[in-house]
Structure formats: C-alpha cells, structure tokens
Length: 77
Image (cartoon, rainbow, N blue to C red; front, side, top):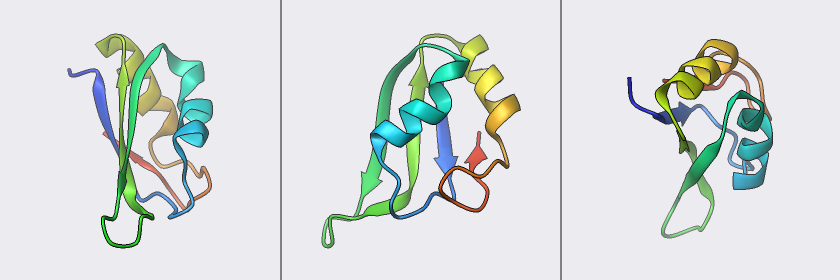
C-alpha cells in the first residue's frame, strides 16, 4: 500500500489546515496538496495527503473513509 491518499468529495471551502487537523491523529503527515482551480483559485473538491508510512495511511483510510469533515462524506483511498 502507498502512503499517499486521495481524498475526494471535499467541500470547496476545504483548506490544507482543515485536512491536517482531521487526518493528523492517524499519523505523521508529510504533505497535503489541495487541488485548486486555475481560473477561480478555489479548491476543486479533492486533495492528496501523504503519511510517513503505509500503516498510518491505512489507519486513516479505516477511520476516515465515508466520514463528514466540512463535506457530506469524504472518500479516502
């Protein structure tokens, strides 16, 4: 398993800090990338979070997949 997670179905108001706060309890986050629309500058509704190892990433998926965090139901994979 990879330590980089795709997080989908996010609110257009989601920030890097909000994702670090939500996913931080599951391990050491080394990078967060929130995809932004080039024209509007707004988040596009998905992000990538990289954990320091695959076990922490797996724990985050197990706990966060389908949960609500400023959005209806995040998809962690």
